[in-house]
Image (cartoon, rainbow, N blue to C red):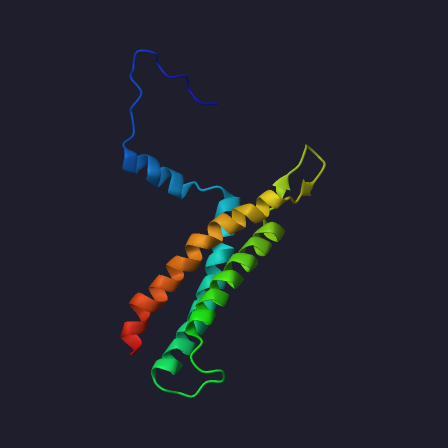
Length: 135
């Protein structure tokens, strides 16, 4: 057990940055899994989009012509759907004691809310940071 704190000593207050760092280090496992699943899908599809974008910008003939806007829309939709489904499958909600685990729409919602910003952040990194180095 822990020793009891002396009532006369004041509790040390943490600063804003210290609180946020502690929250970052001790993130709940379901959140980490949701972010990781969305991040893996977004990075793989982001690299595929980068290859397509570089091929178009270098003048290579691709089937269907320049469909970058459609490719970006498909990228975002696939990242969101796959991130939600994978999170639904990987992050079950805890059940009552001894009754196992169950899945619900809340797990998919967690994946959705994790996938939306990750999809756009990875796309920004690919197009604005990585692509200029490769051109």
